[in-house]
Figure: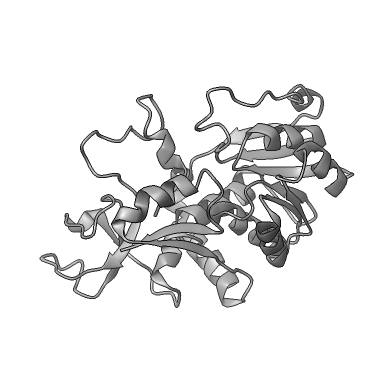
Length: 286
């Protein structure tokens, strides 16, 4: 799995996860099959997930591997909708933003792994959804997921497009981007709107972040803006699997994957995250 949060680990700064170690493999999520085991907790043939790095084969103590739940889904689903991206979207929407039926929800990067999950969970829970994506093809895909309106951020200013799509304003903003999307959400926020700040991919590689012209509206509209980390909710994984599994079984969730083949393709896959090179989850198949 390649994910935007890894970019932050390339900076030698204090954060919720330590920087990568020079000379060591990049660490990130992976799923695979046990081919040899000396611990009774795992047997040959078990499907597992680990965080032991970008490598063809991983060796470690049994505690470093998590056996995947017995759900009738492809194993890579546990790197996407049933993994960290899906859990991020699920708890960010329902717990951090306290989104509920009847809310109007704006989702940036709605064609990505996290954003597309938010779109579908929000629709399944009875919300009106406005998504943002780059380009006509991605916008059409987000619309096919059930979004009520889709903004193509490459076609013009997001602030104007969001005002047109939600003339009465938004109750919830799920932020994967920051920058002009966050500013547009502030401009369209209703009183007591809730913002779940998941990521800011717009500024990860930009030395001069976008100016927030509408930040002061946070005061008058009593907007609650909260950042969060998915690890805060790991103790509720059973609840997540139960609810998301039910949505999958009911056919209310769809997933898209952008797959690169071979470990040597990993850098290109990673860079593609920051240039809009993926629809859905970006993966590398070994």
